[in-house]
Amino acid sequence: MKKLRTIRPFIFITVLLSTAMACAAADGLRLHPDNPHYFLWRGKPAVLITSGEHYGAVLNRDFDYVKYLDTLAADGLNLTRTWTGGTYCEPFGAFNISENTLAPKEGKFLCPFARSDKPGYRGGGNKFDLERWDDAYFARFRDFVKQADARGVIVEVNLFCPFYEDGMWVLSPLHPGNNVNGVGSGLSRTNVYTMDRNSGTLAIQEKLVRKLVAELRDFGNAYFEICNEPYFGGVTLDWQRHIAGVIEEAQKNLPGKKLISQNIANGRKKIANPDPAVSIFNFHYATPPDTVGMNYELNKVIGDNETGFKGQADDTYRKEAWEFILAGGGLFNNLDYSFTAGHEDGTFKYPSKQPGGGSVAFRKQLHILADFMNAMDFVKMKPDNSVIGKLPAGANARAFVEAGKTYAIYLRSDKLVAEIEVTLPVGSYKADWIDTKTGAKKQDEFKHAGGACKLVVPPFEKDIALRLIQR
Image (cartoon, rainbow, N blue to C red; front, side, top):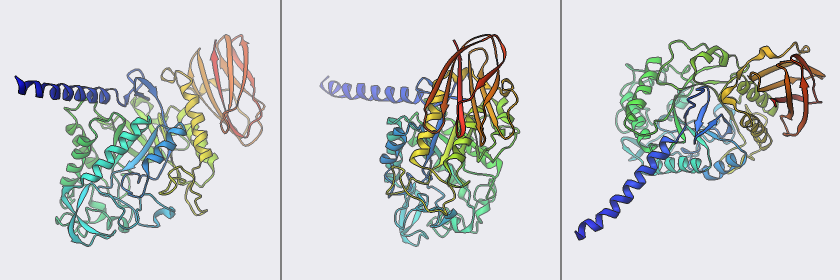
């Protein structure tokens, strides 16, 4: 009996902790049951909007991810995207990105696989042993997701990435010159993510997926993306489906199964034969946001989860974000090059050669978009540009509507627009004109007899948003 008294409290506490973790996972990110174009997160409808660092928060030992996540939370953003480092990192100077977090300095690259006792890794230090895990790496990854969860930030865990050039492949732990296991012998960079020409890398990839699923099992704020930009570097579709199947199998007995994302194309593409395991279909540089309408009937989240190679002007990416979300998209992520190791608060002054932008001011502008969406019952709304009348030459507008209740309109033009025409049912309305750069509001109330309604547009620079609520 004395022994039982000693054990029972331990059993009780263990059961409580297990139950709490299971509840946390079950309350995690999932598709909204009433409108799966959006998410349900902690019991509330969610759109994911962010401007995040260049994916090296975990694999780069120099990066202070707590400070970074504090910044995202303070900026009102709720998403980050990170690479696992299991197969991919970048060399210094890749894509002309200054202080690239995916290109750690020598000795600063963290990988799921443990180092061996044999020197010779191309990126510095010893080669990798693909049969052993690096426990310190997984402790860092778990803490990253835990810290994100504490701040209400979702983590997109990108499992794999193609090798755009040979200089990237020779840095991979799967490259035969970088591991002591003989994996990847004779393999070219374009055959790494295939089912039949992978020189032993597939088994390692499967093992890594299972390990990450197990390590993140208790966190509800993560989802898995199969592969970044699989339309480059020889990545095959059957391999992508296989990896999705590995994720499903690995978490089939776990509570709160995590969503799976697939990156489809740059720009736009009509998805044929969608994988039923996939809940999020992500695109890159998706402007104009035609791909949302092309794939809206799938009733899954359509995301624009990478943009940022179109110059440094905030205007470019602000317009892309507003248009994509009001077209019915559920996720937007800009590549923000103001985040670097040493500038995790997003204040790095990048040089003019940088391919994209990002700034404190821009992140505040994205917060305005997030607030705009969260002020509406967007789960009941859908894109409907038919309510907008003819616009002046050079102007463009998008409408997001719950007919008879809420009308959200985004208008952009480089020239003065004095008025717009919106088709509305009879009723009384409250109008909020919102400056997309400052968040300043101009409010009005009016009655309408039904049909075409002409609204005077306040002066604006480049773009403005309107929210109409029928009272």
